[in-house]
Image (cartoon, rainbow, N blue to C red; front, side, top):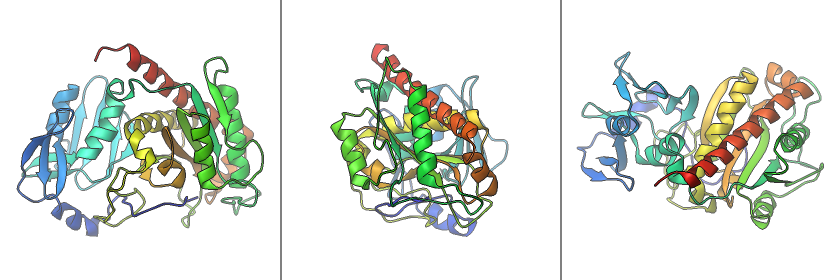
Length: 346
């Protein structure tokens, strides 16, 4: 179910709107340097990074199986882009860029924020996680009490109950001796959105994961998606406007953008592996619990209660256990990345 947001957003752009998007990338480029050394190509008002420079940085070779597609490949990594599309594949996991991949004077580019705060943290997490904690995990079961969240039209399945059951199972999977695990709610109680973030801050959270179930008007919509906070000044994945106008405001959660990308990627990857559900990708939004998060934070939509098959699976305790296992493994992957960052050379 869609959560309360601030500001506008973005999504995969309909074909008829792509020309409006591409117009923002058509100016004569100027080249500067990004903070981590990527050359910056100014495409109109937008700072971009050439995919050829990313390929050199990560030791990837470029391949173009079709004129509108580009692949960056190595024995260990694969990235696949489509011109005019925000949806890419990275290590067989779907990611949504905040601006579509494009070409400026024949050279493939992506937005600088996508290069620096999404792709680079996933491929080089040690550069972004050094000095971060990874001990206190806060699990947030969405909704509760008088706020039931989404309800399935196919049976008595309510979002608040499914979310609470999943977070309890995640807690049971996480190692007690290594991590401190707190739940924002232990029972069927109502919590304001700001209270969830406040509790995470009070407990000194290093990791915040909010669990939800999705719902929508299309009964065919199915699968799992994980959200991280939209970058300052950029939009949200679900907004279909080609070039949204969003104030460049930094929220508390934006101070953890790179870490959240690593956490969200690991959660989405593990969830799809454990459940074999449709991969709807790592996405961006300004949900309140992400805006105000005091640490690396994600919001997971575990499936669509408006879809008959998803609802059936979410009603099954065995499937909820699979979801919990995937979430716990994704959290531990992130914990491992933080610990590895501490021992790696600069």
